[in-house]
Image 1 (cartoon, rainbow, N blue to C red):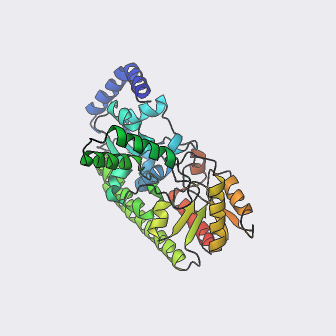
Image 2: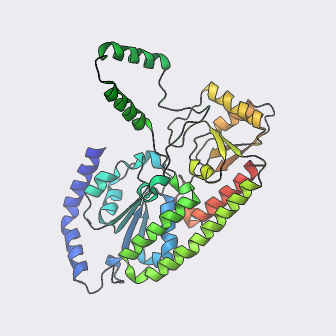
Image 3: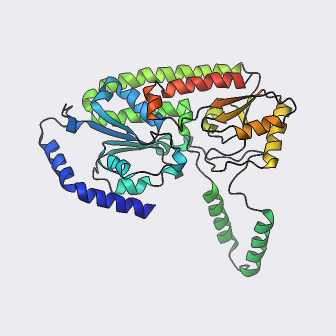
Length: 365
C-alpha cells in the first residue's frame, strides 16, 4: 500500500506540477490571498476531512463562511473507516489543501505517505489522537468477547518450552523487555474518539484555532460559532448524564462490534459485546452467543443493541437463545456509514448523538 500511494502521488503530481506551481505563483502575487480573505475562487480555503464528524464540526465552526470554502469529506459514500483506501483524487485533494483533519489510528496508516508527498508543505494538519493525548483509550477485551489476536494455549506453551530449551542462556531482563514489547504491540488504539461529547469539545477548540490561523479575518466569527456549539454539546452531555442517573439498568449488551467505549466510559456504563470496535470478524462463536444470551437472562435486559451497518443476525441469534425471546433490537449509530446524501437530508453530529441518547434511554429501562 505504501509503495502504491507513493507511485500514484508521484505520477499525478508530475502531471499537474506546472499548473500547480503556476496557480501558487498567481495566488502569491495577488493582493488578497486566502489569509487576506480574497473572494477569488482559486483562493478558497481548502479543507479535507476523512470522516463525517470531522466534516460536520468544520462546517459548524465555519458557519456561513463554509460556503466560501471547499470542504471535502473523503468517506462520503458509506465506506467504513477501517476498510477505506484513498483514491488518486483523494490523494490530490490532500496534497493541495490548507487543512487536513484525520483520526490518526491504524486505519489511517496511509496518511503518512500522502502527507510526505503533498505539494502544500504549509498545510495545517490535525490528528485527532494527538489532540486528545492521554484521553485516548486502547480497545479492551471484556468477558465473553471474540477477539482476533487470541492464540491457542497449547501452541503458546509449546513455543514457550521450545524457547526455554534453545535460548536458556538469554539474559532475563532482555527477555522481560521483549515480552513487554510484544504485549504493547498487541494493544490497539480505539479510534472511535468522536463518540465522546467531551472529546468533541476538545477537538473543536483545536479545529477552531487552526481555521483562525488560516483565515484570521474570520476569527471572531469562528470563535462565536464554536462557543455556541460547545454550549449545545454541554447541554447534550448533561442530558446523557441525567438519562443514566435515572436509568434502571447500567449495562448495555451488543450483538455486534462495540465502538462505543468512549461513550460508556463517559457515563459509567458497563457493557458486553460480541467483538471489539475495530474487529473485522462477522461470525460469533457458539460460546459467545450463549454467553451473551446468558447475560441478557442474568441482568434481565429488555434490549440487544447493534450498530448502524449491522445485518442484525447475531443480535437475533442471541435473542433466540434467551429465556423470554422478547427483547427489542435497537441501533446505536457510530457515524461510520453516513453519506453525502445523509448530510443533504439534514444529518449532523448533534442530531445523531441526540438520536443515540433516545435509543440509550430505551435500552437502559
